[in-house]
Length: 242
Image (cartoon, helix red, strand yellow):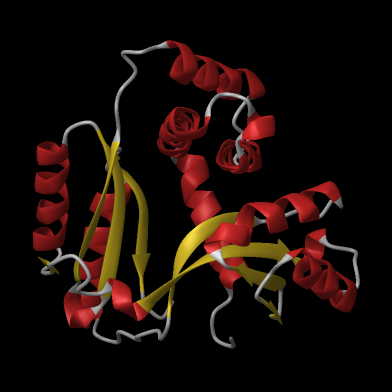
């Protein structure tokens, strides 16, 4: 696990998100809509909605905004019907990129995503062309600075709750789960008062690729910036060695 300071990357992402609060709120708002439509508006009976609410609170979304989003999704039959579409492709130096979107206009989204790849000298591929290089896992990051619990005790709590793996890094603990077990593990930690820097189902690269060429890095960053600025894009995953 060495070489990948996930907590440092999370802090960097959160600093960027703080500057783009509207974007992260848009992402979470759409996830609330999907969770409510799939499992109903009552968090007690909808684990996905509980997960999204936890994520919303971690990103400082006001409670009234969360509640408004749930009520709107539950009561408005004309609420936007978002469709999940995943795009896969390659950036410069063969970097694998997965783009998860929620869109109410797939033609617009497809054009925007393709444009982002092209402007960064990359290319869209066929479904499955890079996803085999990633593992879909629940991932929970706990910063050591936020956790007073002994590492062994935290590990046993996570494993007893159903986690697959626990690893310790310089500045954080990483807990990985099967996607189906993620909600249960997250809720056990939450009930025990464990502060989570990040908790989500994500795509984890099996191997990371280093890019030394400055032009390639600049082009890759252009693609990533264009994707992250797009309201239809929920998440972007790469196997870039940070």
